[in-house]
Image (cartoon, rainbow, N blue to C red):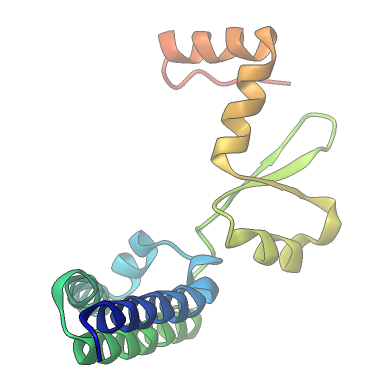
Length: 160
């Protein structure tokens, strides 16, 4: 096997395990943050973070066997944290719900939350990422003025 082929094989293994870990992360990340995990089970949170460090180190400079070993362990870690949070009946904290004075309801959170928001609220709630909210504010001078007031007066709220 040539050195170039060996590096390509290593790259493919790393990409494959990153995908598997990302897929395993989705159910957890759609509902909870690591802060919630830390509050619910600090010891499990510490083990989870350690495993993620081991997986990251394996991706950066480990052997193929270490990538596979720690990738598989990371998948198991996501299953464990999801199961623990579900067993604790932990409330979702990965998204925030906002309601306007006329009844508009939106959810703001990272992309994994979208399906969870639809599961909980159906089409009655529109989901936005924080980046989309920032872009909307930048589009209109009225929103920019509100943002400026909030910058000058941290904690100020709009009342409808």
